[in-house]
Image (cartoon, rainbow, N blue to C red; front, top):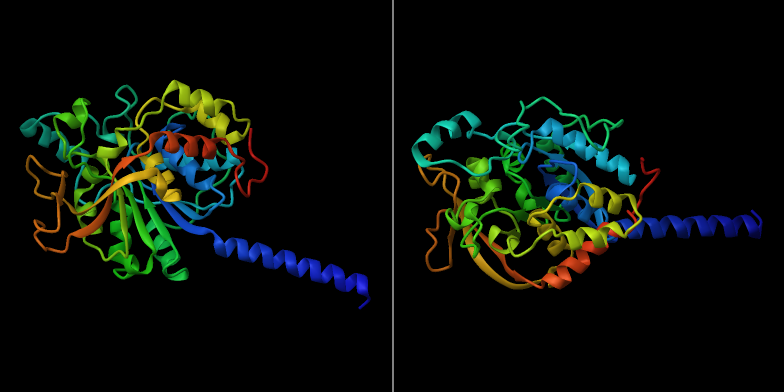
Length: 362
């Protein structure tokens, strides 16, 4: 082997080592998300995590929440095409909650009053459809297919493949995680941490959905039994973004305008399909990436009411002195944030080139 050939081999080995070290240094995350689209909080949260140079997104597991699962899978696949990340597995999960149902809630409302928002069950009001229907997609239909797998098996398999390395980011109902726990009760102990967008404790807002029902929050409410199971599992660490802090954020026309200045496929997708509203899931995602955005925390024991009466699905919270000691989880709950810093980081994530992108679709 002459000196030139040896040099080429050495350069190749150095390059391979660099790639391996870079992959090892990234933060492994599973995105467990309801994924209504195009645009909106769900898709923008997915983009926040996929677009970060710090993350290794192992997969995106989808379940019914803001929309029905099959429709959400299609929107997620199309987003991965648009930004050039066809390599990220999109894994179908639960279509229905463990116990709760649209039919039960319709009867429940005759006793306890109307729910403002029920995700796929009542929204958008003029376009409600069945669980397996896929309405026309403004962003175009995907040409790629979902993974030939199911969310619960995928999640547990990744936890065992990368023990104590994987963050589970859960920003929809908790059904997929509850099914994963039933499949492999040890799996929560094998992950690094659980990041949740869910729960409502005492939000200071005039928004009637929360001002009149301060302990109601959609993600925990849609599948209360699943939420209860997840909040009693043995996670090493749990970080929670509640309604209380989320309602301090807002997707405004100015924010959309700043994102529109970006030339990347991700930026143009957000600018085209963004909707006004709270930045629920985006805050949970971005604050995980940069915890310095959160300026105030509190530790609380959390659970969800599974009594099928008036308080069904509402958030229960206690401090160290008052919790009942029935296995409730102790969570790190975000209480306040630096909004200017959050918006700056968020805009940066929406407008930066997508790491690992190949052949973004038109």
